[in-house]
Length: 264
Picture 1 (cartoon, rainbow, N blue to C red):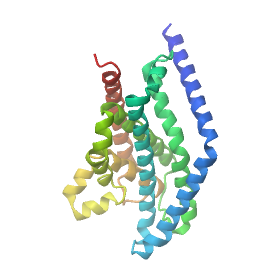
Picture 2 (picture 1 turned 60 degrees about the vertical axis):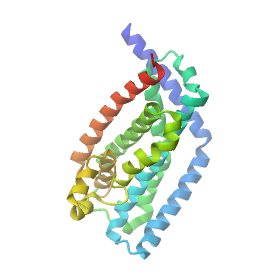
Picture 3 (picture 1 turned 180 degrees about the vertical axis):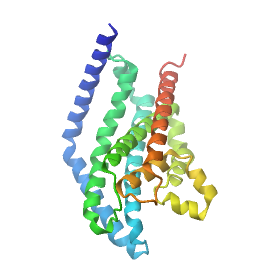
């Protein structure tokens, strides 16, 4: 009986994912155009403008990876806004809650859909950016398998974190306070626009503060995998930390969902 229930959940989960992919495919051309414009802008910025302003060529690759993290951060914020608005006004979630699918599978569908949608632009930016930057992208010893693992974990982290924010806050507080109180410190101390080793050289206590931020391990892990070398926090540290963060976020998300949807 349990097997059939799980199998039924999986079938509905797959049907929801297929529906979302169909929606994504109908908007694919616009998404690709957005990605091309973004790639062109970032390549121009990191290959010409920032070097003219004094950025060392050895840091171009690391900073470019940081821009990919920023794109994921931005897409995750959009995910939060959509869901926190739905919980306050549209309540489309009420329709989905009556579907014959358990809550963990339903919200897993939300996460997987976000991962698929966000991988289109961020994947284009990562792969074509590495190719188009050419010799300006100083690759030392990349780990391509590690890059796939850390990239998938990063997508999962952003999906869980931003979905959690939409359920743990109310609409008014979210719109007024989420950026200055939560997202700005997270992004500012997440080693997206700087390298952790450089911060450690400048201020060890500030570097320790950055190590409390899971975004640091996303940024440094992507750099360590795509560039390599001793300048970044190694993958064998980043992957376990992100994995533990994902486990904690999964638990916190289900708790917040229960409190929001079943307040009594």
